[in-house]
Length: 455
Image (cartoon, helix red, strand yellow):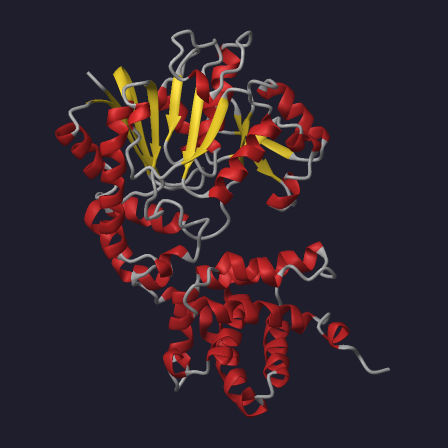
């Protein structure tokens, strides 16, 4: 019986073909890796194991692309920049399997690559592909040992390596680069307004998860074969008992010092982790308080569970925040669409805390966003720093006397971290209370947090 197209695409080689098609879009303007991977994984008849394989293959190939291209160039008479894009993608995923995915036998990686070449009707190039892969099967490990350039060894653009080496010690730079590769920890934050950390741990273990202590008393690291998306199907998640949030982002609350009855303004709230965390703390500290709406902003009698106004200029992202508010059963947050680069005089001088978790280069988060290092440019950092200052100029005007500005970014560049901290003190006349630069490691992402008081 003749196979249908879908039946033919069920073979192992066609899982790799799906990965190749997703990777082909990486060099196309306007596309992001996660969007194309999501599209590739959308086929309804893929099993969870097949989806996991494709996702891992694409993600690891992107993560190691600079290293992989260097390896190919060591054994090929034709440079990667001169190859047909689809052949280069086939070579990339195959080298990834040979050298960076222990679960894939070398013979399978090579034979399936040659099958894809045939599917693409490029049989004349099978010898070329086979020759490169056979050589790297034999010589790849030794070549990797000779890759002394950190840009090649850690698959990081040279300008980012230079930026790190200029700012940090050799040991710190190595740690940052090393943390950008491999699996990232999955951390959850207990909704302390709904359940105790101990009770949540017991509940999660009953739901089949291995739960390890986090860096905070109410955070946990999840160790399980479950993919992250399956967490969102757990009853404990749908009941609002926890949220997924990195440890460094959770630390914003440590620096902010939220207390019951506070008015808190979150200027760039999406995706909502920090404002929901603040709402949970206020609810926990003021259990008997009534809810407070946006219209009650000027009411001097703020209930014990306080009031949080979460703003973002993106309507879609604001909708996600609302979904989380409903899921977590929080009644002390209001949401509004607003561009933080504009000033809103109706909010001037009214807030105990202003959270300014601002758009940034994201270089503290490279371990999770493995395509970002290929998209970001140094010029982008300079432009982002200008936007950050526009928002900070507005943020300070929203604070009441004695109120605190909480500035945070998920990056580690000097321009966006200590440089902005100095600007806030020097130009905005606030007093610095605390400052933390968190370098990425196996426990948490890179992050910067600083708090300032309006005198």
